[in-house]
Image (cartoon, rainbow, N blue to C red; front, side):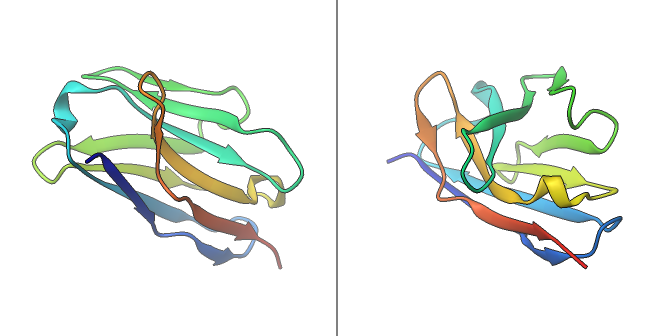
Length: 112
Protein backbone atom coordinates (compact mmCIF):
# COMPACT_ATOMS: atom_id res chain seq x y z
CA UNK A 1 0.00 0.00 0.00
CA UNK A 2 1.36 3.39 -1.01
CA UNK A 3 1.64 5.79 1.90
CA UNK A 4 2.81 9.40 1.89
CA UNK A 5 2.98 11.11 5.28
CA UNK A 6 3.84 14.79 5.45
CA UNK A 7 5.15 16.59 8.53
CA UNK A 8 6.92 19.78 9.50
CA UNK A 9 4.21 22.36 9.02
CA UNK A 10 3.25 24.93 11.60
CA UNK A 11 2.73 28.58 12.40
CA UNK A 12 5.62 30.81 11.38
CA UNK A 13 6.15 34.55 11.13
CA UNK A 14 6.68 36.24 7.76
CA UNK A 15 10.30 35.91 6.70
CA UNK A 16 10.74 32.66 8.58
CA UNK A 17 11.62 29.20 7.31
CA UNK A 18 10.25 25.69 7.50
CA UNK A 19 11.35 22.31 6.26
CA UNK A 20 8.57 19.96 5.28
CA UNK A 21 9.12 16.21 5.09
CA UNK A 22 7.24 13.45 3.34
CA UNK A 23 7.87 9.88 4.44
CA UNK A 24 7.07 7.44 1.67
CA UNK A 25 6.39 3.71 1.84
CA UNK A 26 4.79 0.93 -0.17
CA UNK A 27 6.64 1.59 -3.42
CA UNK A 28 10.17 1.97 -4.79
CA UNK A 29 10.62 5.61 -3.86
CA UNK A 30 13.72 6.25 -5.93
CA UNK A 31 11.95 5.25 -9.14
CA UNK A 32 9.31 7.95 -9.02
CA UNK A 33 9.09 11.65 -9.73
CA UNK A 34 7.83 13.33 -6.58
CA UNK A 35 5.88 16.55 -6.26
CA UNK A 36 4.77 19.11 -3.73
CA UNK A 37 1.35 20.66 -4.21
CA UNK A 38 -0.33 23.20 -1.97
CA UNK A 39 -3.90 24.31 -1.47
CA UNK A 40 -4.72 27.64 0.09
CA UNK A 41 -8.11 28.20 1.75
CA UNK A 42 -10.83 28.61 -0.86
CA UNK A 43 -8.47 28.03 -3.77
CA UNK A 44 -7.66 25.25 -6.20
CA UNK A 45 -4.57 23.11 -5.58
CA UNK A 46 -1.38 24.69 -6.89
CA UNK A 47 1.60 22.62 -8.01
CA UNK A 48 4.78 24.09 -6.52
CA UNK A 49 7.69 21.74 -7.20
CA UNK A 50 8.84 18.44 -8.73
CA UNK A 51 11.98 16.37 -8.40
CA UNK A 52 12.88 13.42 -10.55
CA UNK A 53 16.17 11.57 -10.53
CA UNK A 54 18.22 14.71 -10.70
CA UNK A 55 16.29 17.70 -11.98
CA UNK A 56 14.22 20.14 -9.96
CA UNK A 57 11.28 22.18 -11.18
CA UNK A 58 9.49 25.03 -9.45
CA UNK A 59 6.44 27.15 -9.98
CA UNK A 60 7.28 30.75 -10.79
CA UNK A 61 5.46 31.84 -7.64
CA UNK A 62 7.94 30.05 -5.37
CA UNK A 63 11.20 30.04 -7.35
CA UNK A 64 14.30 31.02 -5.31
CA UNK A 65 12.49 30.54 -1.98
CA UNK A 66 11.61 26.83 -2.14
CA UNK A 67 14.10 23.98 -2.40
CA UNK A 68 12.98 20.43 -3.07
CA UNK A 69 15.22 17.49 -2.24
CA UNK A 70 15.02 13.79 -1.53
CA UNK A 71 16.88 11.13 0.40
CA UNK A 72 16.25 7.86 -1.39
CA UNK A 73 17.98 5.88 1.36
CA UNK A 74 15.42 7.23 3.84
CA UNK A 75 12.47 7.19 1.40
CA UNK A 76 11.88 10.83 2.26
CA UNK A 77 11.05 13.93 0.24
CA UNK A 78 11.75 17.40 1.59
CA UNK A 79 10.69 20.96 0.88
CA UNK A 80 12.74 23.77 2.38
CA UNK A 81 10.75 26.99 2.42
CA UNK A 82 12.55 30.25 3.14
CA UNK A 83 11.41 33.87 3.30
CA UNK A 84 7.88 32.76 4.01
CA UNK A 85 5.06 35.10 3.02
CA UNK A 86 1.45 35.19 4.21
CA UNK A 87 0.38 34.03 0.75
CA UNK A 88 2.30 30.79 1.33
CA UNK A 89 -0.36 29.81 3.87
CA UNK A 90 -1.80 26.52 2.65
CA UNK A 91 -1.96 22.81 3.20
CA UNK A 92 1.10 21.27 1.59
CA UNK A 93 0.86 17.81 0.06
CA UNK A 94 3.46 15.50 -1.39
CA UNK A 95 2.17 13.55 -4.33
CA UNK A 96 2.95 11.09 -7.09
CA UNK A 97 0.91 13.00 -9.62
CA UNK A 98 1.16 10.47 -12.42
CA UNK A 99 -0.32 7.76 -10.21
CA UNK A 100 -2.75 9.90 -8.25
CA UNK A 101 -1.28 9.30 -4.80
CA UNK A 102 -1.36 12.14 -2.30
CA UNK A 103 -0.53 12.38 1.37
CA UNK A 104 -2.85 13.83 3.99
CA UNK A 105 -1.07 17.18 3.96
CA UNK A 106 0.60 19.41 6.51
CA UNK A 107 -0.67 22.90 7.36
CA UNK A 108 1.62 25.88 6.92
CA UNK A 109 0.37 29.17 8.34
CA UNK A 110 2.37 32.36 7.88
CA UNK A 111 1.21 35.12 10.16
CA UNK A 112 2.55 37.69 12.58
